[in-house]
Length: 172
Ligand SMILES: Cc1cc2nc3c(=O)[nH]c(=O)nc-3n(C[C@H](O)[C@H](O)[C@H](O)COP(=O)(O)O)c2cc1C
Image (cartoon, rainbow, N blue to C red; front, top):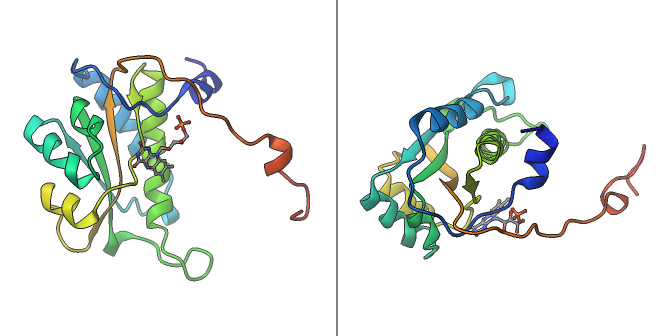
């Protein structure tokens, strides 16, 4: 699929068919995440691929009752490993959320190119996700996404026009 068609065709999917994601497709999606850039190329990440139905079900309350998280055949949780994160962004910032966001978005776009649906999950209870997935201290879940074949077509959400979000040479 053409890159721009992938970008414009991606939508957040909140209803999934139970059909499994073939291993080769899942491998390509994970590879797209592996190739993502990161601050200083530290790659401070671990991606937990959840396919066990019991673990997926346990993630639902940890994701504030978002039932579709348990419906999808695969859930990926992107985690930042604190000891590997560059802490000097903008002179003072930790790059963990940016690094993980880029890698997870690579996977989300790869999934879209494969005809799969995803949905960025930021509404979760960190302590509960850590417990369900046995994530140790010093490792932070940044986001999750279910991955699976969409149950129905989803209409694209509106976006602000470029004229509102782009300015030239100076902030205005
Ligand atoms: C940081 C972040 C957190 C989000 N958390 C959730 C979430 O917990 N549950 C959900 O259904 N959608 C979540 N979304 C998806 C957004 O609601 C969605 O991307 C937005 O409404 C635009 O729709 P689209 O993805 O279909 O273009 C999140 C998106 C981002 C970027």
